[in-house]
Each structure stands twice: as C-alpha cells, then as structure tokens.
Length: 343
Ligand SMILES: C[S@@+](CC[C@H](N)C(=O)[O-])C[C@H]1O[C@@H](n2cnc3c(N)ncnc32)[C@H](O)[C@@H]1O
Image 1: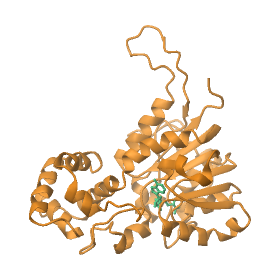
Image 2 (image 1 turned 90 degrees about the vertical axis):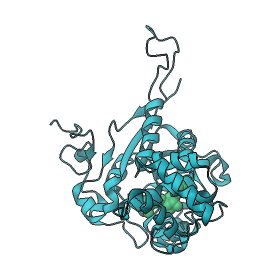
Image 3 (image 1 turned 60 degrees about the vertical axis):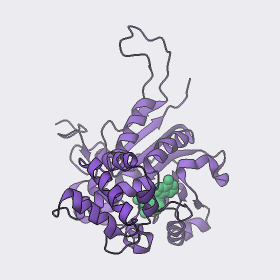
Image 4 (image 1 turned 45 degrees about the vertical axis):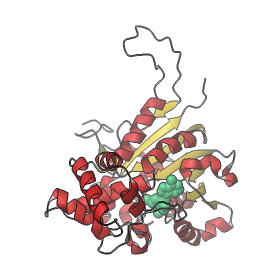
C-alpha cells in the first residue's frame, strides 16, 4: 500500500503506517494522555495540532474541558474558545488561566451554530476552526445533567441549561413520525418506527420522566437482550434531537466557513454517522465547482469551488489511542480548506 493511501474500508487511522500526517508528526499527544483531565480526555490531539499547525489564530468552537485548546496554546497558537455550557467554560478558564492572563487565550459563552449572534465575536475571522462535536465525559457522568441511562436519572440532556425543552419534554411532546425519524437517522435503529410507537403508547399512560422510562421502552421493542450499547446509542439519538445537533451543525458549518480567513482550515471531529454525513456532504458540496445537472455536456453554471477537502477519507484514531480512550473509537476527523481567493 503506498504511503498515505487509505486502508481497506476507506479509512485512515492516525498513527498508522500509511498516515498522511506521519511524515510531519510525532506520536499523537493524546496517546500519552498529555491533555486529559478529570473533565474530559480529548481525542486525536496530535492529528488536530498537525493539521492546524500553520494557523496562527484558532477558534475552538467546542472548548469543553479545554484539552485541545491547551495543546494548541502550548504550540504557540492564539486561541478563542466557545462553549454553550457555562460549567465547561468555567472549567476550561481555570485550566487555561495562565494563557488567558497573557492574552493568548480568550473564552466566550455561546453557541457556535449561531456564531453571528455572539456580539463579542462580530466581524472576527480565524485561520483555523476546530469542532469536537458532542458532549464531554463530565457532562455524561454528571447525573444531574440527565444524559445517562443509569437508573433514576431525570431525562434532561440540555447542553445549555437555559434552553427550555428537556429530553422528557421532547419524548412526551414529539409526534410519532419525528420520534421515528430521529431513532432512524440519529440512532441508526432498524426498529425506529416500533420504538416510536411504543413511546407514544407508554406516554399516554404515564409521561416519560426518568431514564428508566426510556430504557423500558427500548427493552420492550429490542428485547430483554438489549443492553448498554443499545441504550447508549438511543439515548444519544435523543440528546442529538433535544439539542438540535444535526440541524445546528448544518447551519453552523456554513456560518463558520464564512469566518475562515482565505486559505483557512475547518477541522471537525464527529462521533456519530449522522454528524459525519452532514460534515462529509457539506465539505463535498463546497469543494465542487460545477453545479450543472450530471448529463449536461458542457458546464454552463460557471461555478467556482469555495475550497477543497484536505481529507478525502476521515482520519481515525489508532489502536494505541483507542486502547487508552475508548471514546476515540468512533471519532472521525475531516478537514476542509477555504480557497485562498474566491471568484
Ligand atoms: C466533546 S466536548 C469537547 C471537548 C474538548 N475538545 C476538550 O478537549 O475538552 C464538546 C463540547 O462542546 C460543547 N458544545 C457542543 N455543541 C456546541 C455548540 N453548538 N456550541 C457551543 N458549544 C457546544 C459541549 O457543551 C461540550 O463542552
């Protein structure tokens, strides 16, 4: 296999022999857990740092516990971090206080999907933007946040506690078709329609309130052999819906693309096939010049590509990182470069 060629299955594992980044890098930092904290263990740190190495000013749109930001700051980048969860923001600010004191780091509360509404960032552009999607380990572990399928956990799942709709509200109020579409698209669930019907039957007798209510419905449809893997996948689907993560991602990527300086890089780590599909399709669309119908003999649209995909296939974590951090198993990193000059 030539160096840099994708592996069978079309994926490239970071730290693998054929890795595109191997020529310019050292071992991925996260393989040593150098940027892990009690809040979160970031994934693909080495791949992200290598990809964004030439970007002086970076926006970390998913600051979380600040692991990726810390690695980037230590390499001399200027970093602006955004998180919509005040608890995460506080944690990262504590951790990165020394960088904040020198002006190399700033933290801003807000939703990166709606960056144009964040007054403090009006008109700002960056050479590199990172999104490490989903939630951090601490958010998942904290039963009070209601993400977990552990017994008796209140169905909440809001990343931003100021948001009105909780997971219980979503399960109790969504139409059956919406429930089914979510379990299919965000949960890859073959029995999505049956699960949606089961939830509607059950909530007529007793509204959903705690994790056990959803676990009971899943068990009833998937059988008693359904276990933590199924619960995690389907609870995640509910979380994605409650926080409008797929819709937000589509809108957010377009807005963030406009905040890239010419030649700037957008790096996105997705953990779920639904998220990764959104990223893949948008990067492909933005990299396509001609939008004429496929059978058109010649191009008449005169379209110009907005940029190019840097990663034809996603970069995945290597076995060593996965052994240390099982969350890395599902991480898919894709990178897109904005054209140096448009038009
Ligand atoms: C996987 S964690 C990021 C971990 C981080 N890279 C680190 O090294 O610790 C995702 C974080 O992004 C935040 N988040 C998710 N969606 C967001 C959005 N649309 N806008 C702002 N923050 C978001 C979550 O609250 C969470 O803290």
